[in-house]
Amino acid sequence: MATEFIDWVHANEPNTLLYVLTRHPSREHTYVWVERYRGESAMKARGSSDRIAEALTVVRECLDGTPERLRLEQILPR
Image 1: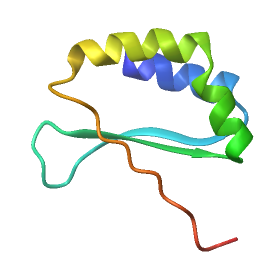
Image 2 (image 1 turned 180 degrees about the horizontal axis):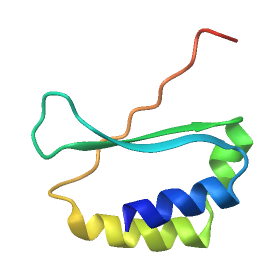
Image 3 (image 1 turned 90 degrees about the vertical axis):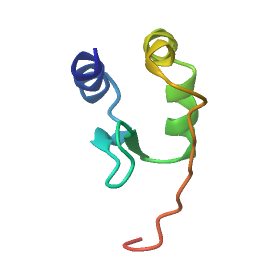
Image 4 (image 1 turned 60 degrees about the horizontal axis):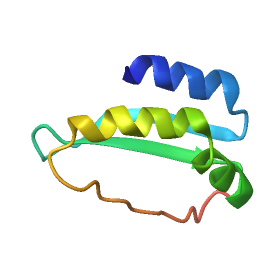
């Protein structure tokens, strides 16, 4: 499911600059989605996508608890 979804994002969301699934370095069985967008409007547009809602439904079934969200601000390069 994750591979298909990542492929879909890369093919259909040109303003999503980075979208990868990674493994947390110190928490066993913890995975981290890393996302980077062209701007605030691109991030908001992705959140309203039907395909995103569908994928999140599947992902939530795999979770053991509430997902943690962390929003980072890029400092360099500008």
